[in-house]
Image (cartoon, rainbow, N blue to C red):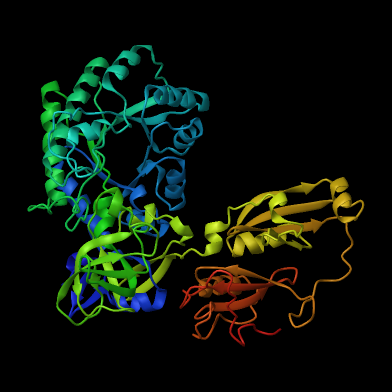
Length: 632
């Protein structure tokens, strides 16, 4: 199936004969394979959404280039971010962590808008150093950017985040029950107050600053396009004032942020009826382009060549995602008030906009269930009210084991999911055509508690082993070993150097030796390679795993066949091709494994994990299937 759903006869997420289907896979299959609760994203829908926005903004703004910088905070999945980059979309990030994720996901720095109030000097320096767009949030940040750029002998690509005044807009914000949109928007902290900026400009030394443009953002207060038109218009007016203060300066780029809705958006529906007319990307784009021209025209600014940018997040990710849960029990009450609770294995902790943004999810059964629609409260497993959807309509025959889906959950829900009641957060799966791939594994209780540190006085007399800190191998030739681990296997070298001989003697009792080391990153652990340069190597290392004392290191990879071919092509002689492990329900089911020896004869197991058919309970050991360990 093509990734391009624009040519598809049916939308990527659709129902056929009562069965919910995600591209070429039924939701029931996904639940059976990956377990529930589960976040799912349709790659075809994600690509279609960003393509529609790119086309809409390009059609609406003919004066210069257009860019869609998708908000990372809506869904910080690196896999999904790579899809958006492949579609030509840039990225809006808020703060250092999101900035680093965007860089790790391969977003070109020049396509990243670094937002965030109260940025650190390190974040500002990092942004400037890699050539990303720095959206400054205060006069102080502007001064720091200029100083940093001058010190580095370079230039900072800067946009000023401004605060258009919408306090006269009386429409109700959908974040609230009755508060005016303009008043709520004005309470949002980011942006430089215009009077403060104009007062500070004459005294600022902006040498080193490339003042490229401006930025403003109106959050998801409404699905109506009109407030976004007003927002753009009033930003245009602020640009005119800024141009006058800067002797005719004209921005090269104007970023109008995000906050846009989408068809099927559940935001605010717990408080009000859904809108009769749901604006499209084309409708939003036309409104903001029109408003911007209206605001800029009185200042006589030349529009040709000005780039227009938008930062949709919810509108890109939202409809591409859904969330699956399994019914655990159905409880019925007749007095004092008739009620039916359908309790599932998810929680409002995983669908946080239930409470944050008054979202109303409409659950559906993923397979046909008998009975007429009946009004039920769909609840979750966490303490508290945990009513995910009150007064939902589900078939009266719904029962334990049935799987239900909450639609349009692709934006913010996974990003905001928490660990209340120490509940482990769910896995996330990407569906592409007829294939489904794990893009974020489900947490375990160990993940939830791994940051815990119990003082010795509270642990009692018995010491506690926290886990493996690192694995160390003594090698004959450090450069040769790094060619294998870094060059062929592609792992990252964290540090390299020599250890003081006196320290080696104190730690190991081996006197008069020089030890060179390299620390190699292996996920959350470190592989330490040590070369005792002055030690005498009596004989080459030989190993047989069947002998007592035999060891091997298991390295997890994402494509065992590709690693095998790379190693074999370099002459490393793996001991076998990748071997599929049996589908026996264990933690190893469906994994691909093979063995190879490193240049010193240390046995390395290459493992491509499949998704476990059932989650490992905390503290429960799951055995490796018989015959899974090749003998040598």
